[in-house]
Image (tube, rainbow, N blue to C red; front, side, top):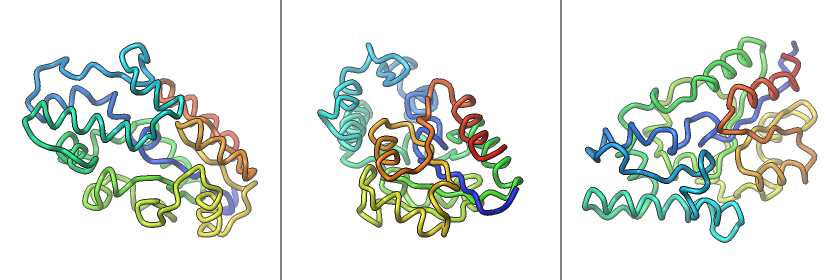
Length: 216
């Protein structure tokens, strides 16, 4: 396997477990009664009309999470106006609990095989905070991190994909991009970047497909 191939990952939902999957951690950490958080996004869309509105592009992903942050803030009688507060308070103490086990396996396999690794995120530090990122397991294995918190270029803008390719120094056909949001996959499609639409309900399958595309 040559080093000249790369796995490009979205962060939230792909590398981390989604906030839907960690309601138990959030409730425990914030001292909320078990079962307080009932919205389950892609795991049960019937529980989450707001998620459906986001999937229909009536609201942005940022708006969705800011609304949820505000709601949970009110549950603990605080005013939360940004995602960082939510993520820091809900899960910031234990980054390793948030890492997807399937992501850990895939990242280590890719690294062992000599692949380059990149993150292409719309809100890594905006949502999680730089402190969380620095303490996140395996973050040092990534060769490139392109974070729209700083670039201000959000997927599915073609420039976001072009930037990560340029920083990797690889042609697009040597890369596979993995994201859980359909619109970001459509963005990759538009620039001819090989991709896997990550299914948060079947993470192992999605990772296996991406690694297979890279010859693993």
